[in-house]
Length: 66
Image 1 (cartoon, rainbow, N blue to C red):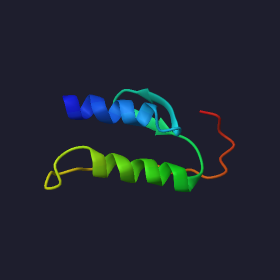
Image 2 (cartoon, rainbow, N blue to C red):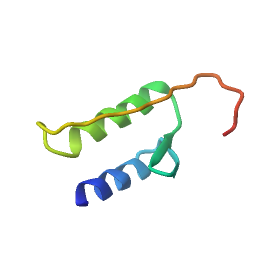
Image 3 (cartoon, rainbow, N blue to C red):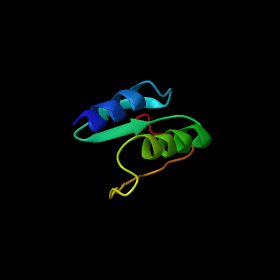
Image 4 (cartoon, rainbow, N blue to C red):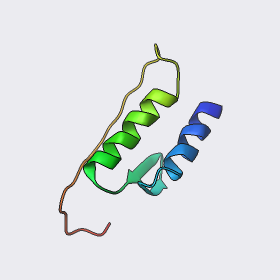
Protein backbone atom coordinates (compact mmCIF):
# COMPACT_ATOMS: atom_id res chain seq x y z
CA UNK A 1 0.00 0.00 0.00
CA UNK A 2 2.95 2.34 0.56
CA UNK A 3 3.70 2.28 -3.19
CA UNK A 4 0.12 3.18 -4.01
CA UNK A 5 -0.05 6.03 -1.50
CA UNK A 6 3.35 7.27 -2.65
CA UNK A 7 2.18 7.37 -6.26
CA UNK A 8 -1.01 9.18 -5.29
CA UNK A 9 1.02 11.81 -3.41
CA UNK A 10 3.36 12.13 -6.40
CA UNK A 11 0.43 12.71 -8.75
CA UNK A 12 -1.18 15.24 -6.42
CA UNK A 13 2.08 17.23 -6.35
CA UNK A 14 2.86 16.83 -10.06
CA UNK A 15 1.31 20.07 -11.25
CA UNK A 16 -0.98 18.16 -13.61
CA UNK A 17 -3.35 16.68 -11.01
CA UNK A 18 -6.95 17.91 -11.30
CA UNK A 19 -8.96 15.47 -9.16
CA UNK A 20 -9.57 11.83 -8.36
CA UNK A 21 -12.78 9.87 -8.01
CA UNK A 22 -13.62 6.16 -7.79
CA UNK A 23 -10.11 4.82 -8.43
CA UNK A 24 -9.53 7.27 -11.30
CA UNK A 25 -7.19 10.21 -11.42
CA UNK A 26 -7.73 13.13 -13.75
CA UNK A 27 -4.68 14.98 -14.96
CA UNK A 28 -4.81 18.26 -16.83
CA UNK A 29 -2.31 20.32 -18.77
CA UNK A 30 -0.21 20.33 -21.88
CA UNK A 31 0.13 16.87 -23.41
CA UNK A 32 3.89 16.83 -22.80
CA UNK A 33 3.46 17.55 -19.09
CA UNK A 34 0.68 14.99 -18.67
CA UNK A 35 2.60 12.23 -20.46
CA UNK A 36 5.76 13.07 -18.49
CA UNK A 37 3.78 12.75 -15.25
CA UNK A 38 2.55 9.32 -16.37
CA UNK A 39 6.07 8.28 -17.41
CA UNK A 40 7.51 9.31 -14.06
CA UNK A 41 4.76 7.47 -12.18
CA UNK A 42 5.53 4.26 -14.08
CA UNK A 43 9.29 4.63 -13.51
CA UNK A 44 9.18 5.59 -9.83
CA UNK A 45 6.65 3.20 -8.34
CA UNK A 46 6.52 -0.56 -8.22
CA UNK A 47 9.12 -3.15 -9.15
CA UNK A 48 10.56 -3.03 -12.66
CA UNK A 49 9.42 -6.60 -13.35
CA UNK A 50 5.88 -5.94 -12.09
CA UNK A 51 2.75 -6.07 -14.19
CA UNK A 52 1.15 -2.67 -14.75
CA UNK A 53 -1.88 -1.73 -16.79
CA UNK A 54 -3.35 1.64 -17.68
CA UNK A 55 -6.67 2.72 -19.12
CA UNK A 56 -6.37 6.26 -20.40
CA UNK A 57 -8.62 8.64 -22.27
CA UNK A 58 -7.06 11.75 -23.78
CA UNK A 59 -9.00 14.75 -24.98
CA UNK A 60 -7.62 17.82 -26.74
CA UNK A 61 -9.41 21.14 -27.20
CA UNK A 62 -12.57 19.77 -25.65
CA UNK A 63 -15.29 22.29 -24.81
CA UNK A 64 -16.28 20.15 -21.82
CA UNK A 65 -15.34 21.53 -18.41
CA UNK A 66 -15.90 18.17 -16.66
